[in-house]
Image 1 (spheres, helix red, strand yellow):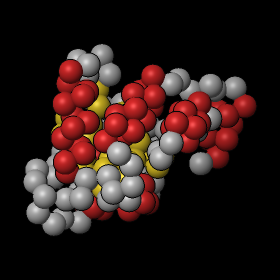
Image 2 (cartoon, helix red, strand yellow):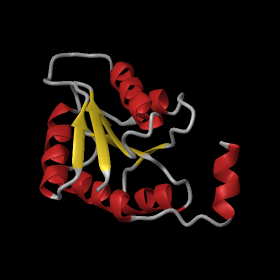
Image 3 (cartoon, one colour):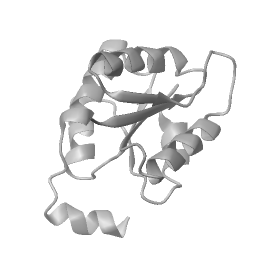
Image 4 (cartoon, one colour):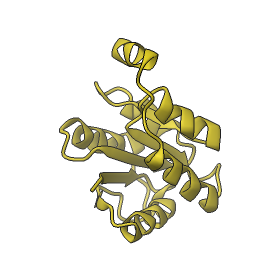
Length: 141
């Protein structure tokens, strides 16, 4: 069973809750590290918290949600062995896994629909890393 950790800031809270329900329905083991409501918070705090959990290898996949997805991806990618990808369409989502072996999906709640967010998360979870020539490139990150 895949273990997935989720986090958001205030702007991403509602979408994070929807994604969490989706994952629980699909029988994933889900850990939600906040935020717990729509009160204003600082997105880096939650990106760092999630990244530390992924780095510990207790959870294999992370989901970060903020208004644009940009702040979360910047903060998460400061961590060694975190490969966060901002997914905004089907192709960007597939390639983030196929070529970059992304272990964290970042979504912008103000830029994509709920329907598309669910679609991108599902694609992210189902797509496997191609390996091959891409392994060498991942090591260079």
